[in-house]
Every structure is written in structure tokens, then in C-alpha cells.
Length: 296
Image (cartoon, rainbow, N blue to C red; front, top):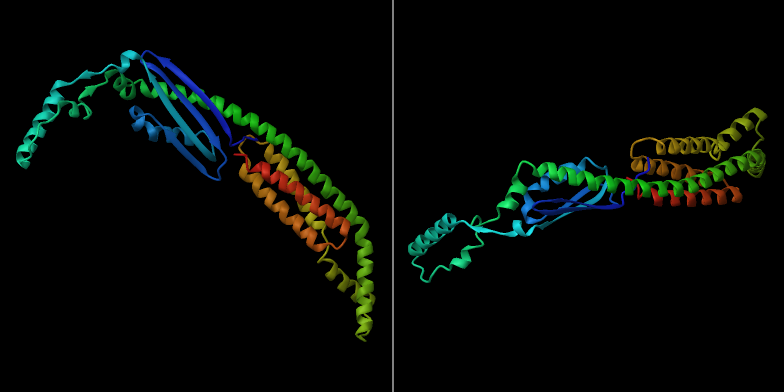
């Protein structure tokens, strides 16, 4: 299944305390990488987001950004006098012990933890229903994100198949050209072998020995095995792309194997037309490889 690593989606939920929104965006990356940007009230939920996101995809760089627009009532705060008095007394005792002068400003104590109580926010971020809300929000965003990645994957599949068909055509042409030129090349090689023996004043080989030597030498430029493996790789490529799992890594490996076979073909043959077809085959493989880099 072709699924792109690139995608984006946003989702939001509205409750009595305000509106919470989530943006999921992803780009290409060799490995699985996750970034979660959360508001201060949800800082303790970062490990939860990492755990959930790891199960949604295989590779790519994903960023989850959460924002909360609090309702006016939720923004209201109340002063916890007991906590404020405790801070004041402890600071006063510390000043006396250190012999420090000056007065303690009450407004400087308001930013200390627990002095100003935001009960509505605390109820959401630490309450029993918080995980249910975050799970619903993440599920809503993930569905849209995956739909977009699947749509982009479909476009990539179309583009890849165009170049795959071109590659298959090049390999078919090389095979047909090789059948025509193999016999001629084999005979030309025997002639060169006879000429080399005569030039060196060496006795001519018997027909059976000549055939044996010719076969040994011909094996070095025979490309029938490479052509057979290329056909097998292309068939495997199509079968893998039709599977239900993400196939980016597998297809990338197959392209490497096909590139190796084409390089071998190019190095073995001397026919300029076949070598040119091999160059065109490498061009198609490069186009396929570029598109595969976008697949999960």
C-alpha cells in the first residue's frame, strides 16, 4: 500500500471550559521522529502523545501541536490565602536567619505554584475525562491526517507505475536486442580468439576445446541471468505495492537490487544500443527511487 510520509490535518473539540485544537503535520524522514508542542497545562501529557503517535505510523517526522482557548470562566482565578500565608511566613523566617533586610512584596508571591488557583483548568488537565477527550481529539486528527497521506500515496503510486512500465519496456527491449546480438557476438569472439592464437604462433585449438573456451569467456558477458532477475524484481515490486502494509523500505531495497542488475548489464555488454537502453533503464529507476523516498 502506497502511503506518503507527508500529511497535515487539524481537529478541535469544544467543551464548557473552552476549545482544544490539535494540528498533526509530517514530512519525510528516514526514521520515526516525534515532536509534541503542548501548552503548559498539558506538559505532563507529552509522554502520552509520544506513545499514541508511535502506533499510528512507521517512519517520518511528525509534529503534534495542541492549543487551548479557555472560556472566560475558566480563565478566572482565585487566591489561595493559606498557601500565600505559608509562603510569606517561610520567606520571612529565611530573611531573619540570613540577616537580610527589606520587605517581602506580596505581588511577587502571586506567581509561585499554588497561590492562584485555576480550578477549571486543573479539572480538565488532571481529571478523569482528560484522556477520553485527548483520545477523541487525536483520533479525529489522525483520521484526516491518514486520509491525506493515503491520497498523496495514490498520486505517488500513479507516478511510480508510469516509470515502472517504462523500465519494464527497456528491459524487454534489451532482452530482444540481446537475443539478436548474442550469436553474432559469440562468433566474433571465436574469430578474435583464433586470431590471437595465430598472432602468438600458437597451435589452433580443437573444436571441442574452442567451444569450451568460448563458453567460459562468453559467460563473462552473458546477461540472461541479469535479465531474468530484473523481471523477477519488477514482479516483486508490483506485488509488494499491492499489499496492505506500508512498503516504502521494501520498495527502496528492490530499487537498489534492480539498479545493481542494470549496472552489471551495462558493464558486460559492448553493444552501444544495448548500453544506451541500460542508461535509459537507470534513468527510470532514478525517477522511481525519488518517488519512493516520499513513501512510509
